[in-house]
Amino acid sequence: MNWLAIIIAALANMVIGFLWYGTWAFGKSWMKLSGHVMGEGFPAGPGPLYALTAVAAVVQAITMAWFIGQTGANSGAAGAIVGLYVGMGIVAAAMFAEVLFAGRHPRLFAITAGYSVLALIVQGMIIGFLGA
Image 1 (cartoon, rainbow, N blue to C red):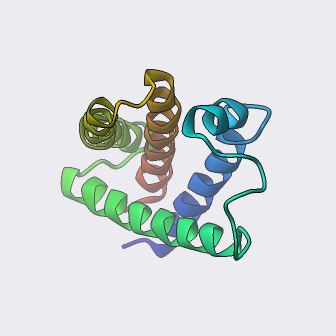
Image 2: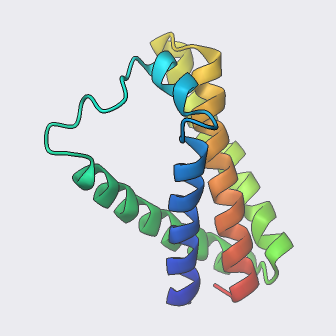
């Protein structure tokens, strides 16, 4: 495994999440649709949430490296395609079923699944380019 590629992909995931859920992008809509209020709901502060999100991003990047290694994808474009397949075929599909049964707003699904799919495409591109 290429640990440099994994760390860069995990960092990219975090940056995409920061931008995606920022108030200038989809943050306000996500908060409204999910029932969250800015600055509330973090009794221990946001630090532990960001740390756990970083751990999840590393796990996701390790998994993407495995998928890319198994498929033989050896370029950024090929890695991005693997990320698209994983994002749409596994992650978004599973999220969609949860949204249907939980009765969540379709726009909330679009925001959360859109972030996941984009992050996986970018992770796949980075790992495919740098090598799994």
